[in-house]
Length: 494
Figure (cartoon, rainbow, N blue to C red):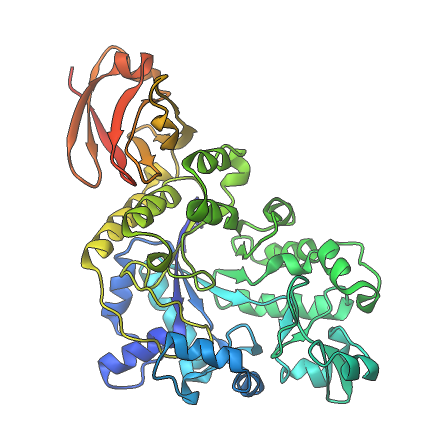
């Protein structure tokens, strides 16, 4: 396989649900080993770089039983799937019983077939890794209880929501320090030397099966965060950071293996420095949902070395569906932004079709929803642009924009450009609900002295402008609400 592309485009698939729907279509049980070739071809046609198969590891029967007793979860299940029945709860993919491919999905041999099919089409494979917690029926619970944060009988009696007695020991339930404990998982002790060694061995085995991992809630095991969360229960803080130790060891044997962090709390920079290739840009997602164009622009003024290691998205399995959060016009504008700036790009299966129901990860089935063919055509075009060499290997720059004393609408414009030896791209987005006018200054001196014809990627409309005017005054734009220009194919015409 060729090395990872700069700023890879990743397509997330809920594996259980995807195979269930393929099974319905094919009228036979489809596993990772028997996915029809035309389905792999259809995915490859999206021109993405990698497939993230969410939830392939063995699910926990005990975790399923615990979830089935959770009235709040059952209510969520029924809200997403009105005809929900208990068989639809196949277990959380983040309540891992073993890092072995679930037999329902085809087992290890099925994954090997799928990886071969993806590689044949030039696609890499990403799988999940959950560093913070394990299922209560994972073999380590009996064989290595020292790998977990433990309590005592008083803890189990006084705080049963946070501690549970099992296999003759009292274990802390897994948690995020800002929320109640998760009832279906046990907390791993990131400071325990044996656990760290076991994690290194587990990741080495995973790295033989795929090309990268998306690490769930990666910031929870940063040493300072873990120490703050668990205090003396975790024991002494090790000399080496958890992720530095784990990633450094793995990359000695697998130098091209990719680590992607689910990250929050503005800890992206810290995780990058600890070895992650890419970290979620949740801050940008929040700005796109709630903030102004100017706040988005300022967010994109960060150092390029930092931005280039962020994962841009407007949807994933943890967030609501984009079509349920954004208007159609705003969704397209936000998608153009995330797809045409530096960094990795993440798209979620169903996003392209305009699905609105966010499915709880426990469910193995989802409701039928109508497809929006126009939205899919938009995304297919955008994906091709995002995966092009011109928007990955070229030189990226912000573009200044100005307006007039009596018209400040230019502040609703965000603009940047890419330049390579062969191509120029200029992207301008009106990220507001009002029309916007302004002058955008492309930082290209080579435009001077000639007239140029450029073509909008989405409308195919051609524009001819003077290079001298664009460099001196700026390119005049007048965009309706949530509209954009992706100007490409710059041709000298005089």
